[in-house]
Length: 286
Figure 1 (cartoon, rainbow, N blue to C red):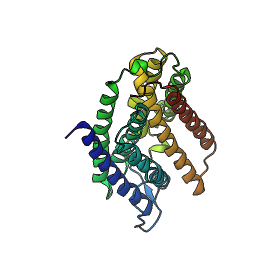
Figure 2 (figure 1 turned 90 degrees about the vertical axis):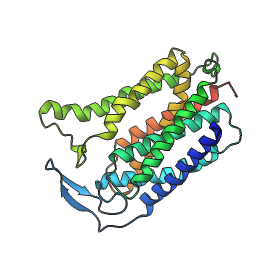
Figure 3 (figure 1 turned 180 degrees about the horizontal axis):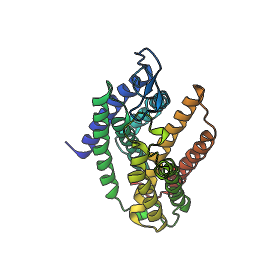
Figure 4 (figure 1 turned 120 degrees about the horizontal axis):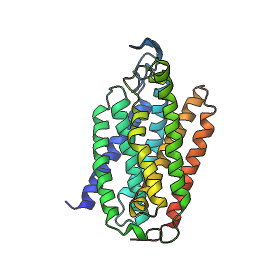
């Protein structure tokens, strides 16, 4: 089986599994409804009590369903469109790699943070397939001469934005983690009944350093920066759109989303702008 055929097979698996998983999150309604639960740390948590995410906190269940809408009605169709093209341009390959990274990170989070449910094996399949698909896509992009992608028109904004994104989000997560450590209480309120802060931990350990390093290398005109910056910006755009969906979903349910809705909106627009500017400046067609 050729590399192209293997990638198509992986994309087909991701599309099928993600369609079932996201539709399950949206449409399954089993359960008696919300109830109060006292965590092992003595914190009173409102549990969703309904649907695929019935064992998660009410707020996290809302967010999971909101992201499922974005995955099912935007990310999956785009993966279908770009994953089965007979011949793809460089820009299309970059877009597909960033989109595949969205599925990888999203379902890795679901796998690690989501309370065990009927879709566990689907999460395993999506995370595994998107991981190998993403690696193959990056290897394919590395075969091109990345130094020629932008010529002399490298958009500095994209690099500076990725650096600022890493710093600002990193400070936001640290402001959640450090104060409880300093005052001796140790556990942030947002920990709820979960075992650890998966999103914050993986952001601080992997995703934000990648954002920072990609931005720095891009500004320094390094070939690896030219490769990773546009891919990361596509990935980040989808991730921020998902976060916007979560914020909107919480707002619809009556949760106070100010000032988060304004902050997230700005970052989302900047991520989309950075990706758009990068794609406009890419010169190589192959």
